[in-house]
Image 1: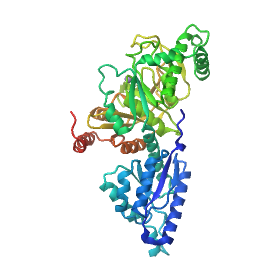
Image 2: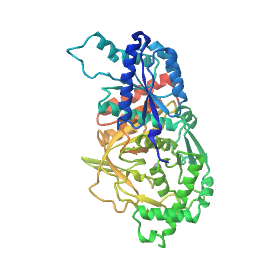
Image 3: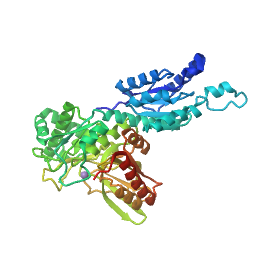
Image 4: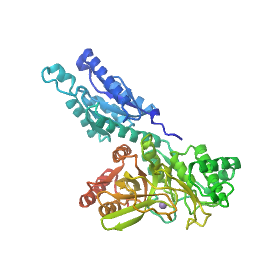
Length: 504
Ligand code: MN
């Protein structure tokens, strides 16, 4: 399931009013068209930017917002007030608008024409106050939106709009999205639990369960021919020892894994699912815990969470959408173990098996090893390292009265030593601002051990996504001060308590 962001469009909407007369409004429309065209062509903006007629009346604005709500392809509005657009005209439309909104605060003309500036220029280029009126009404109505300030031709401005369009695309993808849980949660685990009804009301996606037996039925019906073909694909794509290849004495394990992968793919395709969870505690009828299959499903764009972690499965899917077309991979991840050398403290991230090969630094090998827990046959998995470079870890937790999105910026490194005995894919990173403060902040914030990890998605995209979704967003980065961070958590508790009540 290739994720194609060009299927989505944002509408470029310019606010004005009748007061200016037809000549001025004609010029406003021309300028707006020019800006929309430039944004549509900007490499940093991955979706289509569609020009809409200049808004001059309350009725037109209301109609436009209704059209946006009903247009499946429209994932949001970019608004701008070249001239002055009295904001009471916008109230009825904005009240009904159910699509994300990005308020672009720019000016058509870059420079003041010092020698020739007159009142005509002033009256045409008045976003400086027109956009303030526009911003007031959205703040007054408590509307979540992104405000982007900058000259429209500048790359930095286009990149900010681009980040928001990626978040808006992920949001659109969640609406009506379906995720399946094979089995329930890992017994007694708290952080992977949550209120699926709240999540569906708030986020638009549904999570429903299937007994693993339903999957087993599909897996068992996979033909030998399909298994042959996928094993051949494995041999072409990954390094494998002779005993795992066709004719080898451990080839059977690889065949079982291929059969499971094909079964999962068929199940997800038939059900229209965008992601799934499984758990090693509920594998009745499956020969192995899905390893290589789950890894390759993620590489194909599906969300995944281990041990019944549906929130992370949905988050990984959203991050896959945000990352579409960008360099760098995105994976399910778990903070696994530490290197605590003074001055060089590191986190090794991995999972029992399920790390997406989109984050591999080149060489990927397919290996079969015992799992240690679950009591099943030895599962096949892809093993690789992750390239050095900036990355984010994101975690979504249910706090009873709200969901919290926690984002941590890290820097992956290439370890000085190889890990020849480690039978799983891994990433090694340094934390910002420091190992101690980042981990303390993460734990104070109740961050999960499971995350969505990405070298393509940025904090900005996740923040924009959080704003669209109405999430509490908390960031740990190079500027984090632990004392301030603890206060932020306390203030957020109070703020969300006032908004939605306190939950036990
Ligand atoms: Mn786990």
